[in-house]
Amino acid sequence: MITGALCLCSLSLFGQVGINTQSPAATLDVTSRTTGTATAVPEGLIAPRLTIADLNAKASAYGAAQTGSLIYVTDASNGSPSGQTATINAAGYYFFDGTNWLKVTTGNGGSSGSSNDIYTNDGTLSANRTIAMSDKTLAFSANPTTGTSHFTVDDTTLSVDALNNKVGIGTNTPAEKLHIENGNMFMHHDSPTLYFQSTIPNNTSNPNNNNGSIVFYEGQNSTTEGMYIRHVNNPTGHIGGNHLQLGSIENGIYNPVLKISNITKQILIDSPVYTTSFNIYPKLVINSNVPNTAIQIIDGTQGNNKVLTSDASGKASWKAGLLAAPSTTYTWNYPGPTGTLPYYEKYVYGPYTVGKTGWFMIQSNWSYIQSPSSGSDQGLGNVWMQINNFATNDMPSPNSSLIEQPINETILMNKNYSVFMLPSKMVYLTAGTNYYIHISTYAADTFGPQSFVLNYVQ
Image (tube, rainbow, N blue to C red):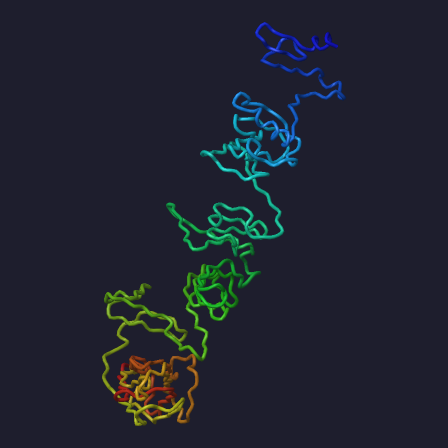
């Protein structure tokens, strides 16, 4: 047996030991005896196998001279980790660093002895690290069944909800595909562009489809109140192609106010949705602090001292010499009661007539204020006034004709400001026809003289 053992070992002149080799290449060189043909013969190097209890018992045997010792812990549960064995928490290879037994891992666990293997343990970087991916890819796959935060960077800085396919910035509970909480989005480029592309075909087979929206709202519900910008595909009843709509959201209903057509290059202004709690306001209001800059219309017919007129369909063009200075005036005085008018009372005054047929501009001295006689602010007052040729108490809606249509206006007012009715309105009147002033009021007082001066224009 001794002879056989000596055959397996060889000693070199340099103090090197070889096992299964006569030419050791290191202090100890163990070479395999088989080349794979003897499959039943195990090979390898087995370090001393001890339990944590064994190491605790041998603590006094290990010091600086044993630094670098390698063992295999077979059982980490038959004793209490303490002292040199404080970091032993599982079976495996451990080495002695002169003070403690540290686990042999694929990373440096430091004095904690824990593994930096991210698949089984947490870890801490001790320095900056760079992953050189070259032409390779780095992918994270997940198949969660619960939760909303499955991949995070600094908690809420970036959070991925892999269950619902959502990304949160500033939140770990994203509500949409991209949710930015308490922050802004900044784009910096020569020509920064934000693209929206609908998956619905953009053709006449999908009318009124919402191709993309930007919604502005306050609070948690984006469908109740707010404003929006939306691209609409081939709206019903319009042949001008697609629309870019700007509108308001009232009680969950999207009401377009302004539409821009991509084919006919039109800008269309819609009527607001009328409710009893809102007034009908002007469609277009232009405020300008610089004279003669509020609006400019250039269509090739513009010129000095021309006026803008329309045909029967409402199409406008510049015309010369249509209007002259007022040559005749008529005054319609108000013979009605003074003071606070009763709650939603209707009045009819007239008849009034003019001596010429044509267009008249109304110079209004007819004003109201929200009932100050009550001594306190009661909110908003309301006056509805109409000029028509009905002697009875009848206030129809204005018709589509520009000639002989009722002149109609509803105005809200409060205690601090008086309002004038029908100021600068143009009205077409026929000589000899009886006209009547109709008034319906709520919480309103007459204010100053009540009269209209009608200036004949042409």
